Length: 290
Length: 221
Image 1: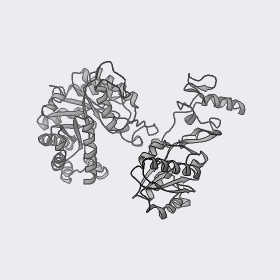
Image 2: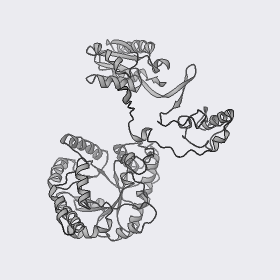
Image 3: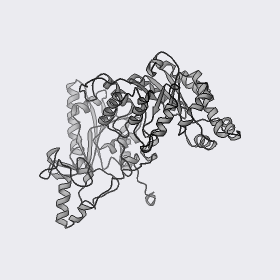
Image 4: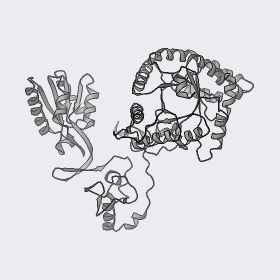
């Protein structure tokens, strides 16, 4: 059963994020993906995540699909105008990519090509509409397509730092659902209570909600995120648990596994953000009991 | 100057359709020079809007004002005397002026009556052309005083594309090829050798690539 069917029939899904290489050596990507075959429902390939230039998600998604694993690629409008986006979306379909995740591109000034010119030809809402238009057999200029692409289309919610920001984010998300998004992927959370609270608020959207488990790779990463990233709440007990562990790396993997298991009880799916630990996903899934 | 063109009358009239009293504000700077939103245009638009209103069987009251500079808080402040008596403001300034009024008078709807176009110069009577895109890192010294970013359709940095012919751009016979102009200018200046110098891919951070821009002069604060 593919991801779209699992989501629409209310079945639990696990999505693992894997990055394309900064270069052309795809051996790690392929090896890591093969290690997950049958253990995840899809692999998500971000596109130049955090504004860092890498091999495109389109190529990454096609490679994953070729391995017989369902893929989902990020699309956004920071780097491509509407022609390039539509061309790549059509290409994604013929290359076997079954799912698109419409996201917001990171600010160019935070990436590794800070001097580049951002395109920003359309926003997330318009991009979701454009995908829907393509699926209906037309391009965004109204011209007929020879054959219609089909995808599962998801959207994301950004982090929030206050109830007011959450309300605004919910309003934006409602618009994305109305525009055609079929599922929501939440930002990273580290406490079940926070997840329960937001899921309660988006229950009315009546689309599958996928939570995100971010792998904390060290005390330093946890501390940095806790202090520097607005909207991230990492309980101090969690940081202390890693700090006091005899094998800190293994403790990080256990925490990720436990969080996946816990969030799996609360949401219809879990996305695992790996931050370079793609090769440790099998162990994390073991700890999650998956 | 910042150039602008007045919006179609129907569009402006539909914006103010719910209102009976408006403040119509022009600007004495760029939009006066390009005949889009100065004192004269304020008077003409005021009459036109009142005629539209009369045709609809209504009466529109228009307070006409033209500020020295609508992008300057000092001048915008003078609208405070009139703002309470109106339902909405229609600005004939560029987008900077419209936003300055909106910033100062948060309780009143402000509508633009012009479309802000570009930074340009007058070519001849009634014709203005784009000259600058405010990229924040001027390279006119390298290109003979002619900007390839503002004046080349493809913003090419190292010579013309294959679409250039007879000194004109492929998009229209009315548009000069910027690189043809640059070459002619370099020849006239005797600096043709500069043409061979490769200009690297532009750093767009000083332009809009770095987000909304601001100039801070501590010596003037």
